[in-house]
Image (tube, rainbow, N blue to C red):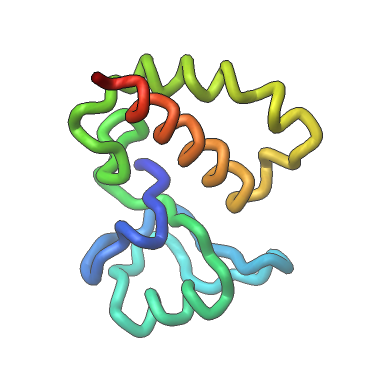
Amino acid sequence: MGMVPLANLTVGMVLAAEVHDRTGRILLGPGEALTEKHLMIFRTWGIAEADIEGVDGENSPALPSEVDPAALAAAEEALYPLFRHANLDHPAMREILRLSALRKVLNAVP
């Protein structure tokens, strides 16, 4: 199971966990196969990511093949001071940190 960003979700993927809106209301339960309608609902309600069966954290489709997961983790660690006042439990803030680290790693590659 692994978190997959909304942009990488595709029809047919199966949820590993419930998807909640900002208020905690359940939008979709585990075991549900995603449809185009589900993806539209996720976009409407601001869902940033979903836990998908068969995807582990290290092999997430959101990570380009040229990025070393250890380098990404080190970049995130280096960026933590910039995010010290942010709520990293919020999916949007987690995604901003992840994208910042990814950009840091990709810009360091010659």
